[in-house]
Length: 201
Ligand SMILES: [Cu+2]
Image (cartoon, rainbow, N blue to C red; front, side, top):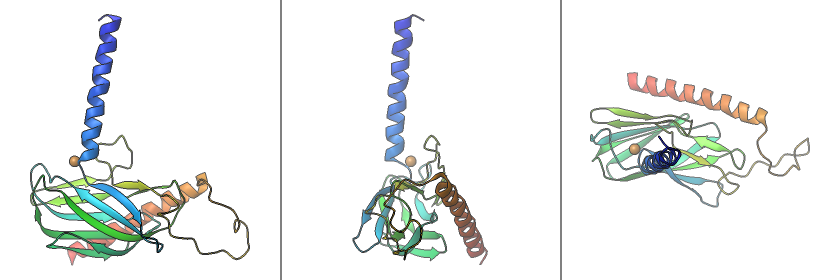
């Protein structure tokens, strides 16, 4: 292969990857928007546009990361939500493959501006289910996520004196990030236990 042919092939591959990435972003279960409500809560809108390999969707199990506390939900006609510790489960009448659906979770989000929040989600369909759980952006099944801003974070309780009481917003330290990750896996484990217990019930 000549140098220019190699360059053309590389460009072609890059274009293909770009298209695949764009399609990936338009599909799956997404956290479409995070809209602050001005009262310390934020509305998180989850959505999907397709079922599981053509099968209609009948459920959405969303694990809440540490720092996200569910307040209320809204959902399409024929669907209902159940809030458990660290998780929200939506169930309802089948939504046909290719029909978009949106689910809103009003939540209090505590953390640091710039912090990414991941919501590992299982999409249940009539015949199958998909796990959208990758927290690696390169993964094939990305978990819904958003990056917090000051506006989407609940105000922190005012600390009375003590170190850090007057410190402004800063990037999360490595220790904070590691602590958040540990808390998130604990929350995920708690949610899993809740869901399994509920399933057995
Ligand atoms: Cu998809």
